Length: 67
Image (cartoon, rainbow, N blue to C red; front, side, top):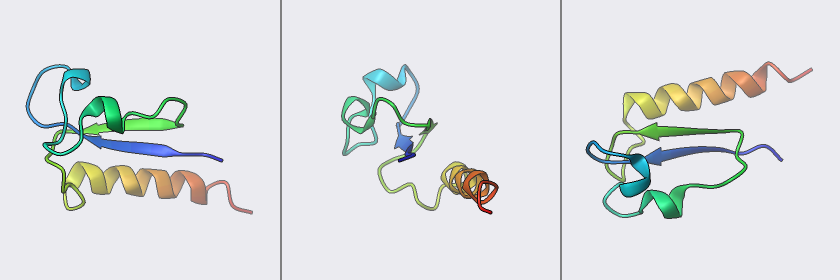
């Protein structure tokens, strides 16, 4: 199974020390995923342009593997 991760981190500084205001990066990070995108955003990031672009990228990547 292939998995991707989009993790919200507010503010500057190292992502490992941050979080999205609800979930810490250390809890959101998943080892072994195909890709991890850090989006500088609060928890509700579904409308963030970076998030939308990453979802599109993942969907295009997987569409290219279809017969």
